[in-house]
Each structure stands twice: as structure tokens, then as C-alpha cells.
Image (cartoon, rainbow, N blue to C red):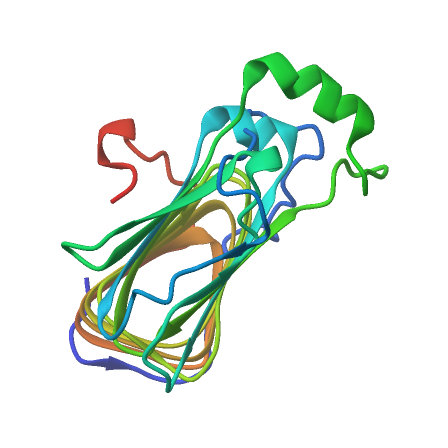
Length: 231
């Protein structure tokens, strides 16, 4: 743990470069939702929360690519919700929370593997989920296979990002609590990460600037306790 501000051009590279996640996945997963790739989140206005979780069954079927883009607006927009792939979305109006679940129906796994469009030597193409949020928003994403990108203007709010097999890239993030973990991949902070309590762990960490009262960085493999996974 370190206090104060960590200077620019931080790069933690232990031993060897980040490993690409394996083509034939270690885990399984598919997707549940509404019936189209767009989801009506117009009821969500102002500060709220986003929770995305990928099941073990879906991760083996295909990877995900999650993109969260904060902007100056007050509303939430979502694409990539697809019931035929097991990606579902629900809104908890009491807490203004958008829940996106990625799961699979094991009865259709074999058929999907045989007919999946976009498959190549490296396996099926990732399924993309894109969420636009207001700048003041809390985000929790837990993937077993896939990449997570947080871009846009800036994101202010508690942030928890985890991918077991993939990379994480963020732009400008700020929150009281920030936890970013990619035990078999790389973390890249393209602009700045600021937090009172920040923890990052990956095979490699590259950052333009990181600052906080309490900062813990680890550039080595991490085994995450299943009881603490998710939000």
C-alpha cells in the first residue's frame, strides 16, 4: 500500500507479457435478455448503478466484450441485449440499478457451437455489450472470459471490474473505492485513476497516472476467492 500520488508513466511488468486468453475456453456460458439488441433503459435518469455478470456456462461458449461509456447526458442507453444468446437486462427502479445477466441454456449449447456465426481459428467472435451512462455512476462488471473497456468522458463512482481471462482498459475514473482485477491479462489506465482506496491486480499494469490515499498494485497472478466475486 502506498499513500499520496503515484507519478505518470507507471508500468508494472513482472517476468512475462500478459497471456492471451485461451481460444477453447476453460469456462462455459451463453446469454438471456429481451428479444432485440437494444434495451429500453429510458426510465433510468441521473445517478445509478450498472451490474454485469457472466455465468460460467456462457464463458465457454463465447467471450464477451463489455464497453461502458460515460458521457454528459443523464440517461442510460444499452445495446447488445439478445435473448437468443442468453443476454438479459432488468432495471431495479427502487435503486436505479441496471442488471445485465449473461447466461446459457445447456440444452442449446451444442446447437450454438455448430451454428455460431463469426467463429474462426481462435473460436467464436466476442458478443459485445455497450452501455452509455451518466458520468456519476457506479459500475460492477464480473466476467469469466472477455475484455472490459471503460472510456468516454469520465466515470465518477465506486468501480469494480474483474475478468478471469481477458484485459481491462479504462480512461478517466474516480471513486471512493476502485477495484480492478485481470489475473490472466493486462490493465491499462489511459488517462487517470483517482480513489481513496484503490486496488489493481493483473499480469501487467500500465498507467498514465494513478493517485489515491491508499493504493495497492500487484502485477502477478491472482486467485480470487469465489465468495468475494461480483457485486
